[in-house]
Length: 113
Length: 114
Image 1: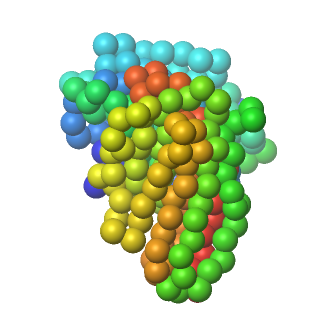
Image 2 (image 1 turned 120 degrees about the vertical axis):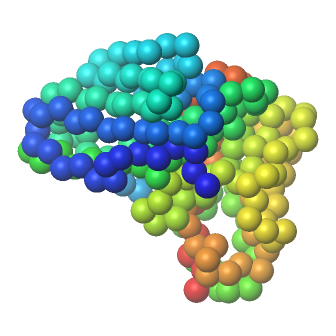
């Protein structure tokens, strides 16, 4: 079964609006990562947040992590049509000695110009 | 090359045939992963290689699936006696080391089993 589960499954917004996607996971983690996938392409790494961090920023991206609730959120501010893609969270389980990433089902984001 | 390279990009085969999918990771990356993505779904972990350690094969769905990594670089995923449910995009990724976390993905090999 998938470790991470994203919601919503699909999100449709207008250009300029903010987009928030959530991810929940089941077991303790070392870190949590967010990836983007454009249609028909491979995944691109966006941001990594470690289990001892609560918030991280990268450009228009803001990621939060609440280990007590086993959840994370990805906020994209001032969205653009080019942000249209699927977004996945991925986790490395705590205690593992290697970097096996387990992915969620993803959120499909559509940004209308 | 500059990125992870996968071939073929598309493969159509008949049920029962064997297929081989190739992955050429980023030079110097010690960790290599194979994932499978069915239409509109998330990524399903298949297998993981790290240096000379024994691979983690825990995600391989059946004994028809196997993978090897020669010389710590190029990897081949082999599916024997393909079935229609094997149809998916097979994604390869590599990372500098297993603990850095960030994976670099190839564009995938789309497999269609008729």
